[in-house]
Image (cartoon, rainbow, N blue to C red; front, side, top):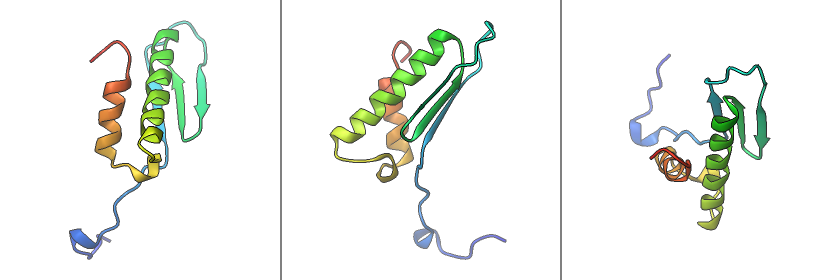
Length: 89
């Protein structure tokens, strides 16, 4: 049943954690990295490392701002991830 609350009254969704999934592995290794509020699974060694580094940097940037993942807007987290991912811009 759809919610009948007006848009302004609906609770905003909160981020509880981040999940990164790499799909480019071909070497048969199962890569899993878990941290506080994130998990990275799969990917080639390079992709897995890149995703992990990006998420860790994003979490550090949030903490430097005095905030936690749950306090941040999804758009802000997406922008921080784009800035933090090494290599591709």
